[in-house]
Length: 331
Image 1: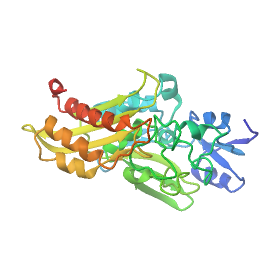
Image 2: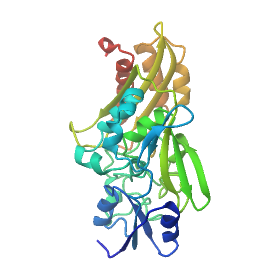
Image 3: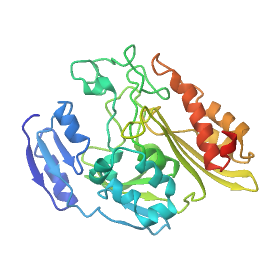
Image 4: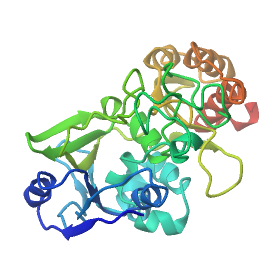
């Protein structure tokens, strides 16, 4: 680990002002990902700005009727919060599927959004990686790529976003609230993370100096028909090969509204509005779910070791929707 200076701040303006005094500063809160990256020499900040004392540590109702999750609330406190469990059980289920209890006790909501890929080559500084060092090449394409992306990839990068929480937030149409050098603004969750394109080193649409302050959940909550399904290599403490956040509104056996988001398959949580539109108005059942799965995986591309994910994702979508609808006997 390289040498760095450290400062703790008490307000966002002080945090942002610290950025101008150093070449490669980094904010830190829970630090569960940043410290790993520093130990592996992937991140080499010269200045660490501790933001854990900022006032972003509450969960409260927001004026629009939903719930506002402070960026510094831990993943554990969010998952076990009474209002989250009652009003957004899909989110609680997704968070508890991620990491270990020890990590959830440290990791913050804002930090969860900022997680970096777990691509083997990104962490191996002896190999080329366009995400770690733009222009150096992608070792995963043509290399061992079992855990990597099958949707939305580019010729420069096939990394995946690792979060479980973010998959549920995508399905719930959350909004990310920001403060920064240019003031406060909000970003729809679908626009927060980005596909690799020709700039794979960028994970999200934040600007330099931005700080995530909170995440807004809309009033619409999906409390009856929901399921977070995570397929992984072992039962705990493993990242998803494929995950599915499924939420349905059903009346008289017919789907009124559907949300389906996938994790472990792309550079960002993956949604297909076309598939959700297809599901709306259909009878809840295997036929509609399989059509939606086929539509979601249209354009999927395997790279050899990860080609199995295409069929795995289709089956996971059908199973998640079936369980969300309460039709488990059809699985």
